[in-house]
Amino acid sequence: MSILAGTAEGIHEIDPAGPTGSGGPPSGTTPARPVGPVHLPGLPITFLAVAVRERWAIVDRREIWRSQTDGSWIRAAVVGDHRVNCLLPSPGGALIGTSEAYLLRLDDGTVQPVKAFEHVRGRGEWYTPWGGPPDTRSLSREQEAIYANVHVGGIVRSRDEGTTWEPTIDIHADVHQVLSGPDRGMVLAASADGLCLSMDGGDSWRFDREGLHASYSRAVAVSGNTVLVSASTGPRGKQSAVYRRPLAGDGRFEKCSQGLPDWFDDNVNTHCLVAAEEMSAFGTASGSVFLSTDRGGTWMEIVSGLPAIEALALAAN
Image (cartoon, rainbow, N blue to C red):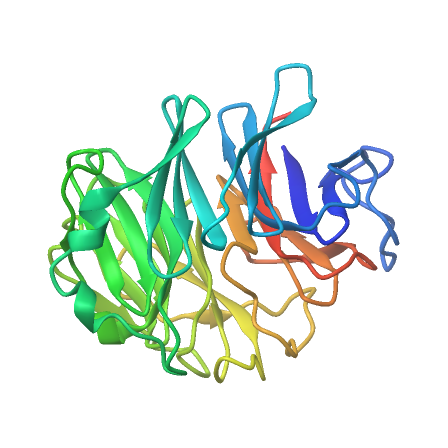
C-alpha cells in the first residue's frame, strides 16, 4: 500500500518500503522528502479518502476532487455556501459533511442537501464550546448504517441510506471522529472523554480511558485486532501521544513509545491516524509521517520536512 499525505502543497504519495524497496530507510535516517509522485501539486489538501482504487480529496475546504483510472484527477464539485470538512464515498458519488452541521450528497456531479439531516431530533442543542456553529466533522459506514459525527452534537445514525437520521451518543461526549469497526455492529469514536465504543450499532456506548495520561482524543484507527487512539491534555495538544490496546475486551491502553518521541506538541488530529491490517500510520503538524507494521508496537519516522499534515490515507498500489 501507499501512504497519501495531504498538505498545503498537494498530496504526497509515500512508499512505506522506502526509496530502495528494502523495507525502509537506513537505520537512524529519515528522508527529507517522500519517494513518489505529488498529486494536485500546490493545492491545499484538507481531507483524503480512498474507495477501492478511487481516491478523493477536499481542496481548500471548498472543492472536491476525484482520481481517474489513468491516475489523473478531476474536480468533481465545488461547494460554495459552506466549508467542507469530510466526505464518505458512496455508490455514484459521496456524502459530504460541512460547517454549520450540514450534510450534502454528490450524485452524478450534482450536489444536493440531505434535508433529513436538518431535522434530527435534538439538533437545536448542538453547539461548540466557543459559541460558534457546530460542524459535521467525520463520517463512516458500517454494513447496515451510516454514522455522522457532529462537533458538538454526538453521533447521528441512518439505517436507510440517509432517508432518516437519529441521535445515538450523548452530545456532551464531545466526539471528534467516528469509525465503524471490523465487526458487525461495532462503532468506535475518539472523544474528549477518551475512546467511545459501541457493540450494538450505537444503541449503547461505553467509555474507555484506562491507561491514557489524559482523555482528550482526536483520532481513532483499527489495525488488525488493535485499536489506536491519539490522546492529549486538551484542544491545544500539549503532551500528545498515540496509544494502543486490544480491540476486544477491556484491556488497558499502552502508550506507543518505541521509535516515537516522548511527546508531541500538537494533537494527532482527526483524519491523520490511519490503519489497515497490520499497517498503521500517522502524520503530524510538524510535517512528519510515522509508520508501524506491527499494529502500533514499534514505529519509524519515514518522512520529515513536509508541510503540516492535514490528512492521511492508505491506498492500494
